Length: 119
Image 1 (tube, rainbow, N blue to C red):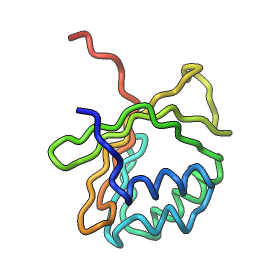
Image 2 (cartoon, one colour):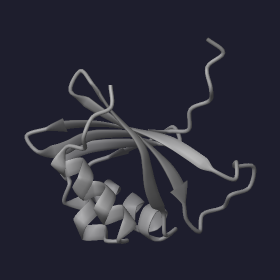
Image 3 (cartoon, rainbow, N blue to C red):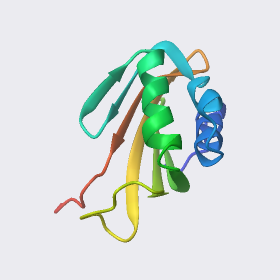
Image 4 (cartoon, helix red, strand yellow):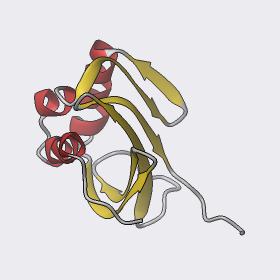
């Protein structure tokens, strides 16, 4: 199930790792939403504020570990790092990003810290 990154998702990751607010925001559709830490962030201006403060502001970097194509959506598992508060986080923080892309733009992104399944 390993897949390659859709171009817009690759652009998003490059923008994140280059701390480039405008490059990141340009990957989203105007009415896109992000769910991060169980918070819904709706619309491009709210996404811009989230990106500015919590991604670029916290100097987040993402090192891709796995890419999965799941019925047209893309799941990217990455090692996250940055200057954010790491209290109670593991030494190696791996998060799953669930991207839905339509017409070359990200229309939804869910960022989730998954736990290992007992199954």
